[in-house]
Length: 371
Ligand SMILES: *[C@@H]1O[C@H](CO)[C@@H](O)[C@H](O)[C@H]1NC(C)=O
Image (cartoon, rainbow, N blue to C red; front, side, top):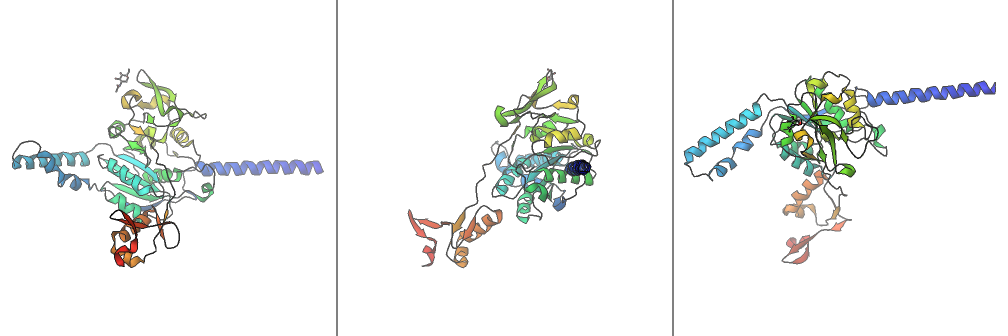
C-alpha cells in the first residue's frame, strides 16, 4: 500500500514537473506577449533630417572651391535634391532595433548612435526601452535627430528580472518583432543594433539588399576578439566564435541581418528568454539553412561593426547645501536638473562629495557669489 502511494506520489511529482517545464517553455517561446507589454510611446514616420542637412554648413563647405556665389547656390540646391532622393527613395527600409535600458550612460549612448544613424537613408529606428512607463527624457533625445522612429516601452517580465543571468534585451527585441508584425511590415531588412556598439556606415549599404539572412564579422567579441562566419569560395561553411556552447548558429546579435520578406514566411519567429541563446534560437525559429546565408563585408574579411561596451559606474551623489534659488542663479541649477533627469548624478543636501567652486585657482564654497 505504502509502495503504491509512494509510486503514485512519484508519478504525480513527475507529471507536475513535466507540466511545469512545458509551461515554462511555452512561456519562453510563445509569440504572444503574455506577461509582456508592448507600449508604443512615441512614433514618427516622417524623415525630418533634410532641413538639418540643408541649413548653414553646406554653403560654408562649398566656398572652398573658387566659384561665384550663384554657383554655390546651384550646388547647394543640387546637393539638397540628391539628399531628398536618398531619403525618399525606394530602397528597402532598414528597421534598426535598439534595446536600451535606463542607466546613467543611456543618453550619451543614444546620442552617439543617433548621430551615426542620421547618415543612413531609409532607416526606421525602433528604440525599445526596458521600462514600464515611457521615458520623456529619452524621447526628447531621440526626436531631435529627425530620424523616423518608434519608441517602445518593453519591460523585462518580473519572473526573469531576479535571475542571475537575466536575459537582457529580449523583451525589447520581442516587442520590436511584435510591432513589425502588428504593422504588417513585410518588406525591408531587420537588424539588431545595441546602443553601445560601433557601426561603420558601410554596414548599412551591405545589409540593405539582404535576400534572406546576411552575416558578417563582429569585432571585439569573446576570446578571439572576433565572431565571424567562416567563408570558403564565397559561401558560409562554418563559424568562428570562442563560445560554441552547442549553438547551431554561434553568432552575435550584431552579426546578421534578416529580410522581412523572408521572416514573414515564419509567423512563429521569436526570441526566447534564454541568456546566451537568443541569436541561435531566433535564427532556428526562422528556419535558417546554411545555404541561405549571404556573406557580407567582402566575404567576411572586413569588420563593419564592433561590440564596444561602455564601462558602467555608479551614479555619484553630490552634496550641495546652498539653496536651490541661489543654485538656479548659476548655470549649475539648470545643469544639475538635466543631469538628474538622465540619472548621471544626484544632488543631496546632507551626503555625497561636497561641491565646491574654483575661482582664480582657489577652492571656494558655492555660496561665494552670494555672500
Ligand atoms: C567572394 O568570393 C567569391 C568566390 O571566391 C568571389 O567570386 C566574389 O567576388 C567575392 N566577393 C567579394 C565581394 O569580394
